[in-house]
Image (cartoon, rainbow, N blue to C red; front, side):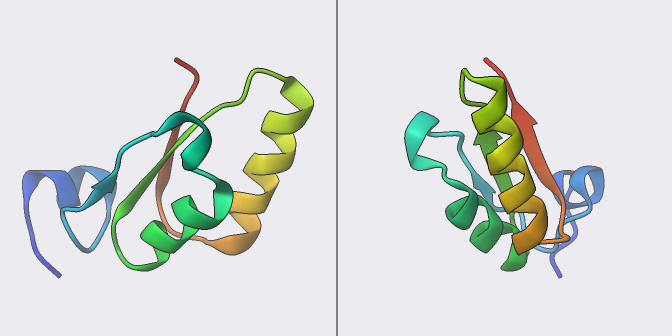
Length: 71
């Protein structure tokens, strides 16, 4: 574990963050980064149904910290 301001703030092991890349940041990629000790960032899709479905997928694939936003 590398201790930095970022790792302490988000409760992650490594100061690595997956940038929210719109449609590329799928639940599998976000979860893989989280499971590897980094911070996975996920951008919410426009439809509420799709957002809930993808959020459920992220939750099933990891119990590590992740960050989601609707920009």
